[in-house]
Image (tube, rainbow, N blue to C red):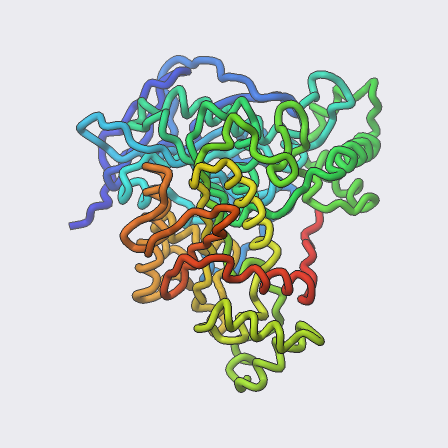
Length: 511
């Protein structure tokens, strides 16, 4: 019998601001594009005005305008969903299992990646929450919010109304969490059991939310997936001011006429950003949060603030995050073992033998070519940030590293974000990860570690060996591969040497 059927009767829920109508499919009530706030450009978000009647929430809401247009990757890595763009992008999506016992379910909040300049809540088909919600008995929520110039142009020197424009995107997320806290019970969720999870930029946003006091009452724990990428606070305010000044100049505005910046068409605003970047060469990472009295700074530079420091955290990364490798599958098929050794040794000129020895010690079951793909850019700050969090002394800091080799290009270590489809139990939507036996195994591991974490703050589950927390004394990492093991400081020397001797990663996306 097909369990995924569409119900004729549509659910209607009363929120604080008015009634909303969704659909029921596969035993889940689904609401799309549900508004949670409103905002004037470059200003802090505000509560919605109440509405009369019933608002239909059947469609994806508008996403933040994208300053970089998406170039979809290979179809076997997943299908991109390109949504309607609009500045009124403060909306969220809900998947809530239908229940008959009024039991309040844990709430899982997904915050998308794309740095702070791109992406959206449903940019990939594998980001849908239906399967995880049904399997785990949770309420799944995903959020859209302001990005790039709309979310992070620092105009604080141009008047009080723009005082927090550099952090408007983070402020949107706080308003979304407030909306969830005040309304999610009506959808079956427990407002006092909310877990945040984000990948890449989404993981960075979760670290930001730990250091925003206004967000503290609205969540109990967080998972940062490949989102700890170093300390960006140093010099950030100065760069943000220089960039904003140049954008204002490119628009032909002054301090006296700055109010017009709220009326400039988005395409013109984006073009001014591109012109400014050609002169300043900051790239899209200029659109990032800036430390102030709202956002207290990156945890790597200022620590975790006391209002959220004791909340449990998961930190994750993958072995193959951002590889700089020029090998095709055809080329790899022609390479002997000696060829493979020669290739990786050449990447670490003068240190090849040492690097091979360190890699074989860390990953004894892996092809030596995997050393060419091995990440340090995310793994090092992941451990550093986890150790910063572990200073709370609560033994509630958990770290994983995914070393699984995916079925692409003759097998390569899992890439940036590859584990997300397993967490959401959507492996069938990322063809290259839907591997017989191991695909199901990884789906069980990742979905259950996240579900147990969302329920209790502890990711241990029956699909893993004992997962010990990371502490200053015991730097434990759960290594997730074809077999799983919790290992202590197993790759520290390796990633340090990759950083020192390996090819240097450069972020090549422009505005």
